[in-house]
Image 1: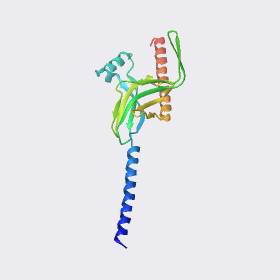
Image 2 (image 1 turned 30 degrees about the vertical axis):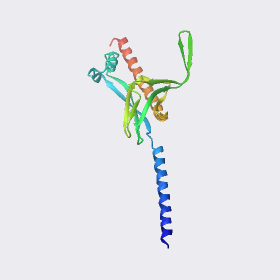
Image 3 (image 1 turned 180 degrees about the horizontal axis):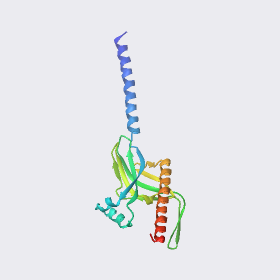
Image 4 (image 1 turned 90 degrees about the horizontal axis):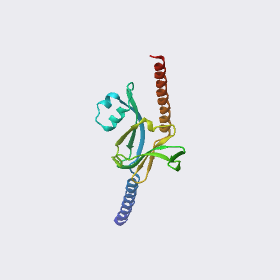
Length: 194
């Protein structure tokens, strides 16, 4: 075999392999963005935690406690960046379903897509393989709760999975039943003079 033919074959092979490697790297860099996963957890703030805190929010929550209440239910929302690049969460919403009619003065507004938009602390940057935790009062989960949505700076929308939305609704129903039963029990005791 002639040395020129071997050189041409090796050069062609090198060109093909390097082109494939370049295409793979470009594809990886375009595809590999920060990805967000939203999960939730139920938590409680106890009277002791609130009394020991200097945060104005905790003092406001404590003012609304009655004498018998030992804790207040909260919802923690975790925003996990499961990608390999940082993400910037520019908007965060707790969504509600169904139409609502609002009367403001002489105007009547009909709203279909309603959301509680969180402004404090946003936008936030979440590093790769890191998370951000936001905590809210359990009262944001109502019977018309429709989910949680985070919007990234590039416009990508990330939603809480539907099965977690349903679990939160079920938990809210159970929590409301417990609160209702406790108030009925305390009302019965006060009527009986206990």
